[in-house]
Image (cartoon, rainbow, N blue to C red; front, top):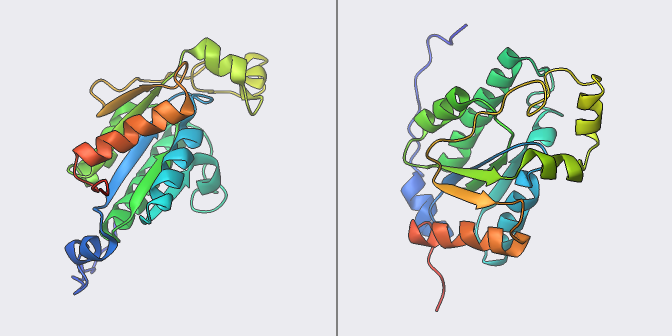
Length: 201
């Protein structure tokens, strides 16, 4: 049910003023890909590099969010849609707060990712962590693919539930073969090109 009798309050400390203070712009870096594709690993590697430069960042990780904000949700298509909707709204608030927010979610459905993009169309950077299913299965960091193949985990993305690859992501990064350092550099170079921050002399 939609909230009623609410009015948006306009703060005196604006996003532009925060950007001036922070010495960088804010943006949503939306890492998407199969389980085991390296989304969280890459997001945290990029965050570390940005942190070393003194920038304001925060990673919203799929597992971590499900411990609190989305702890009441399961993995049905409807719950996955709600999971991404909530993360999108939180990401938008982080952008308004002047933060470079990095999200690491499978987010398997194109329609859900498009809804998040519509919340902040000028600030949404879709980063497709491209990694073949067999490589993700071979890594199987959490042992989830093995359970999915055994039928223990129903509706598992890539096995019994589809993953809809991004059609026109801002970045496609081959996390299956490229080194973590190279992958992170691709993201950082893109941020400089977009004018999110400037490399110091």
